Image (cartoon, rainbow, N blue to C red; front, side, top):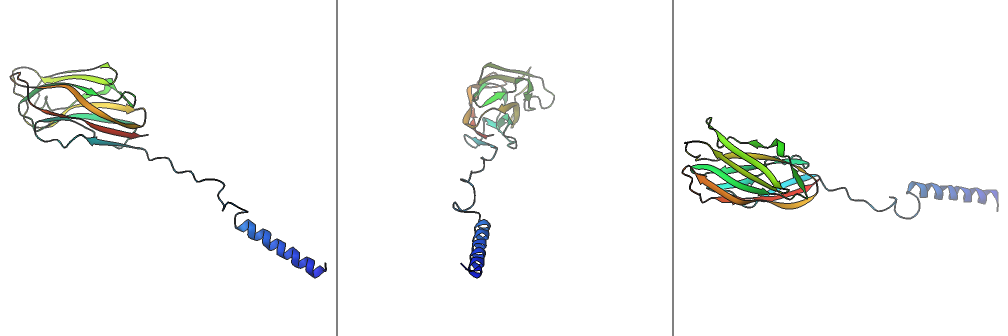
Length: 190
């Protein structure tokens, strides 16, 4: 081989090496393995069982900004002479825990400076037993508003129902009321 041929072969080899390196090496198309999808977005969502109408006690979650914790609200909508309620809130204990020391009473029954009686206990994990009423010779409330706020911390991903069971509402004469009680579904991706 002449020097000229050797030089040409060397130049061709150098071009081939540079071209291969610039294209990301040999085979595979440059990536070093399969593409891994990004993790799912962190989120929490709330879907009510139905849109509340008149004479309804319902569960609601209004702040969905933190998938690690949320506050479940018990609310009344357009009720007449509601004096007290008794109900159980049933939640998925495999997905969340109830912060029993941090619940707060809303101003529905106490509005106007009226005394109330409130009992909240978690007798079984996943079931919160609630009793809330006005006290004394006063009329019930005829409006809507917040009865109680129940804080929860999420512990696992998934979707599950939050439900109201063993529900009773009473007017100021102690007569049971015909009310609709609505829960909903919470979805968590932590």
